[in-house]
Length: 153
Image (cartoon, rainbow, N blue to C red; front, side, top):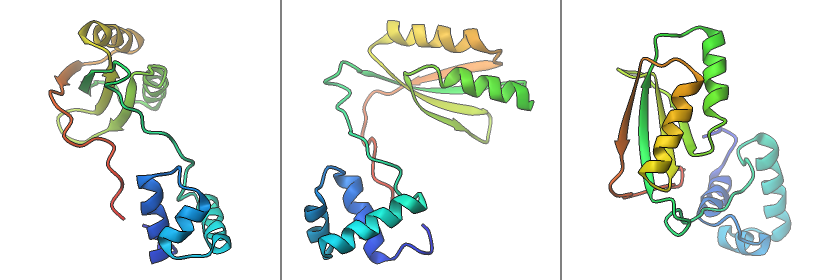
């Protein structure tokens, strides 16, 4: 964590990770600040880049997004041009909710969230049609034990 973020900043960030819809008054009360002091800290956290907006967490099952797939990719290509093309291609697939370059036997890991196996197959076909890949291995989640946990502060 940033050296400039003190305990109060961390308390603000923890509270917002739990519920970003808190009013400034509720947040100020929760962290023991006046509303004005809380507002100034929120403004500074935004300006520093520690706060990157706020989003809503959705219940994927209620939305019919029942299948979570972890996709491991291996490639023979490592040029800057290929990498740029690959990143652009993957980022056009909305079902890819997480995208990481990793070390080890594979080069990339994707987290795909979709309705069912037929929907995943469409994602898979789009993925492999855009760039040449050496191998694609998919692991299907049977249960989400913890998803979208807050960052440890």
